[in-house]
Length: 499
Ligand code: NAD
Image 1 (spheres, rainbow, N blue to C red):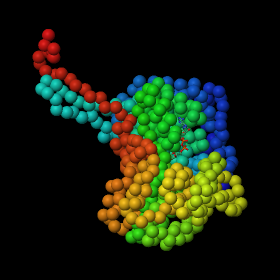
Image 2: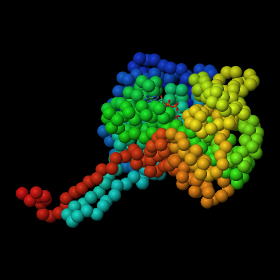
Image 3: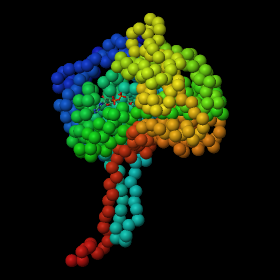
Image 4: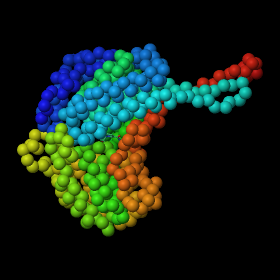
């Protein structure tokens, strides 16, 4: 229960277009809810295609006028630092708003909001590294390259990390001098709307960042196809990513995709058992398992399988579910009833496929869990890697456990997936850790560690987990074009045909 109303919580949230809060063309709104209680939180403007046209025109105008992209890089850096400072000043209110809108635990929300802040600080510094180069060319010529903003960027983000995913996209795009139309997920738009307001408050000129809220299939898709958009940066499901890539192809937009995962967590027999269990429990149940990088396939060596599993279930039982605003809560609610149904249908499917639910597999008991979308942390055993529950992303607090015999076998099993986002390796054998890592088809590998992201380190996937890397300094390059300039500086007039 909140002691007092959150200062950032409004009854109605309009769109942000060209620096103004405006209603959608139809003046329609949709409701957003608190997933932990099912209560209505606020109403958010339901954008139409005409609103997208307005937002794109505003971003295009801001780009062409060089209001932002042609500022000295260091001045953009100052404003990025100011955005981070404003977020720090409102940290508690932003964290609380994120929890109210997403149902995630306080610890998870704090970490993610802090990472969003650090992301702006990272790119505030990185902005001054933007530089062209020069190459040796024949006598009489001079060559140099310049870096220019890629242009108007559509940035489409999912509901599982609402603010952090927005920050991963907005900060480098602003640093590179681009202009933005941000499209948050309909279930969780509130903190992204707050972020855009803070950008304006910090001094980002009107039109540089615009926010469109509404249906992904309608206004999201229209944004992707829009001829006024130069680049699409998308995080979400692999199936949506495929649709986006197809739709963006008509105008050959630049595309970066951060998509789904089914990441392996590999436990060799020589581990520090306690640490490996603690890390593996965190690896799946963090953020209620609604993480693209969730280690949802747990491979355990046969020599320690029984002992490991016993301790894994013992620790899972210790996880505290409940009011996400309490600091000792480990696992919050699922995002929606539809997500609850998806998660539960996979648990039922596991049984049909011949697997066994060792722990969990239902709504937790008790009055606190009757409202909202609660699901017990769940452990499924007797799984083979070809089952659908081992191949498809469940996106909830459900781990499937698979026994393995040796290194060669587990590498083959781990790589036997359409996804390639993350992987974890647990072993005390240093050589084995790196030997296995080098053979895993994954964009991120964690060794004896369950933490997958720090600002500054590249984050992104192999295979159908997408392409392009976010969160790193080199991610700036995904928001810039390179212009190669070849100039004749000889004294004799140029006459290559000799005519
Ligand atoms: P989603 O694909 O349903 O939606 C993501 C966003 O795309 C939302 O804003 C949605 O409104 C919009 N959208 C939906 N259909 C669209 C369309 N046809 N055209 C344009 N936009 C459209 O994903 P979700 O359910 O919100 O998020 C969960 C997914 O995100 C999971 O698969 C998860 O693995 C993935 N994810 C990946 C990463 C990563 O870095 N790889 C990070 C977080 C989440």
